[in-house]
Image (cartoon, rainbow, N blue to C red; front, side, top):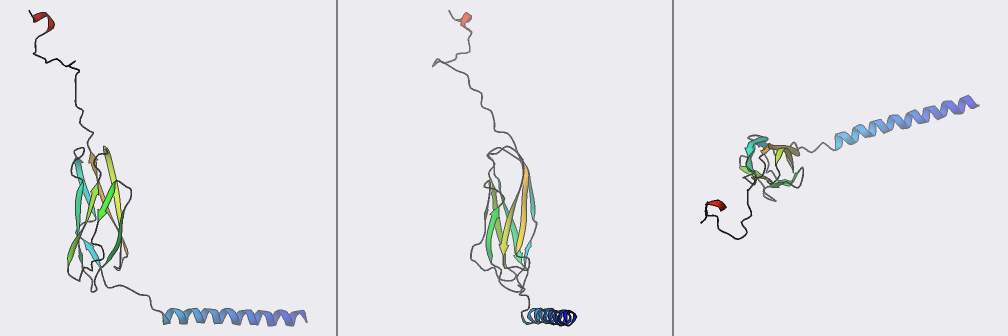
Length: 162
C-alpha cells in the first residue's frame, strides 16, 4: 500500500513539474523581450583633463549620436560623487542621426588626482552607459603676505633712515 501511494505521489509530482516547465516556455514565447532600437554612441567615453590649475576649468562635453532607429531619451545622469555634476538633455527625444552632449563639470577646488564616473540611463539598447573623467588638480596657490603694521615699506632698513 505504501509503495502504491509513493508511486502515485511521484507520478503526480512529475506531472506538475513537467507542466510548469512547459507553461514557462509558453510564457517566454508569448512575451518577447522588448528591445529598443535607440542607440547612444559616444565619440569617446573617457576624458583625461591632464593637469588642471586649482579652481580651473573642469568642464567637458561628451558628444554622442543616436545611431539607432528610434528616438533616444535620457532619463537620468548621475555623478559618482557630489564633486561631479552632469548636465544632459532632459525629456528631449534625440532623433535617429541627431547628436547632442552630456556636459560633465568637476569641482577643481579639490587638489590631487581624480577619476570620476557619470552613469547615464536611457531607453537605448544598452540602457546604462558609464563615462569617465580623470586628471590631476594642482595645489592651491600660496599667497605670501607679511605684516606691515600699517606702515608703508620704503625699502630702507631701519639703520639707513636718518
